[in-house]
Image 1 (tube, rainbow, N blue to C red):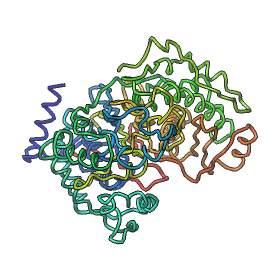
Image 2 (image 1 turned 120 degrees about the vertical axis):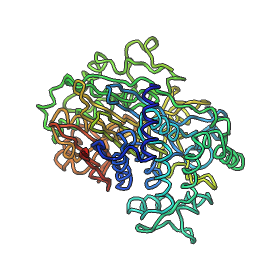
Image 3 (image 1 turned 180 degrees about the vertical axis):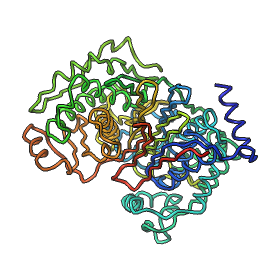
Image 4 (image 1 turned 180 degrees about the horizontal axis):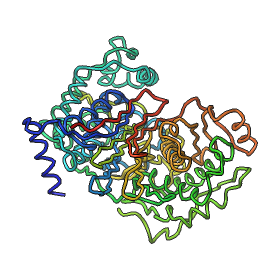
Length: 561
């Protein structure tokens, strides 16, 4: 580890001095939700960086140009495979403040959902910046400060607001108006949201990036940023403090993994529920010969949606931060998955009253709105990162003078057992609010290997549909042999147990929708659902695909001589 870090620092110094040139730069594959972020990642490779540098450049840039979904005011999960074959994770999930408590959002004995979604009480301690810094400093080739300065230049120069950004901004402008620092950035002088095509400049955010570049992440966690945040919280009935920032740490838990049809699938462990439940559903499907089921038939949609339902019932009961809750590893047991799958009826829905009981529930336990981007390089480094500030524009709070839009991840806790969050997800005691606890997440950065060769790095955005989007992309690619482009274009669907509704895209077709209704499914129809980004290695070539539902950008870059 120390040798690798020293090598990275030396490479960075040589790059800065101009001794090491971009000649011989690594090739690779990159997919993000925004063209500017993808271009930043491509440039990192051209500048002599690796896939880790590309991912960090993309993440910091997304915090500027796609900041309503992610940024340094939020958190992230990283699943990475290094060129030497090492697979690891970084947990940059946010933490609840020390003054948080299980009744924080109760008023007159009832959960008030607005308190955990907008304003001071919605904010948890952000972890993305620390995660990116460690990823860069430990495994990258370009100094972290250089990535920060390039992203700062984009924030200062500004960018033209895309149509999707403008539409989201319009829908959140009412809440943004409540906070002067937020309104000053995202609304015009008359208090109206900026229109598509307007240039958005973020000078305060640029300065924050530059301060971190000059002074390190302590400026953020133990210095001026923490002080400014604590002062704003004290003035606005918040509970987040300087001590909360100073005490924040990232962790590097072992990835979860399973085998599926001769492949090895790696995911993020709790407090991500994504890794566990992608694996759980794959384990339910593995005994089935999916090739005999038409992937555009009602049989396919029915089988997989019922599997989703069973997994999400388990999620609601068992999943939480393993530092506080006993999360059983038996959820990923293949024998347990077969028992669950045996309950599925081929032609009608089943009633799932409650969670299942996996093996060794007390003995074998885990140790103590969103965007996804995937990067790989020709040296064998592969990175899948999912980052978030939770719902669009997070808490709607920008800390004055910093330009940093803060998350509302506190809503990912169960405000009270059985109370749904903004995505309708239920939680139990395992995900109740506690000081220093990390809220449960659906983020599912995933790597898939065939032997020692990585073949997929993928993940998604879209609340709880992240889990099911990731699952479907794997199934369409590995079971049906579809190209990444074809796999990401397939109709999406999602069942999360409660509410007992199958969300499904209209492109599934009227015949399929009618047959699903006949089997008892209550349908909620969507024109579009989620956003998946993926890179892959097939037939000796890199592939990169951004979701066709969004105006992202994907690039395959050949190595230079």
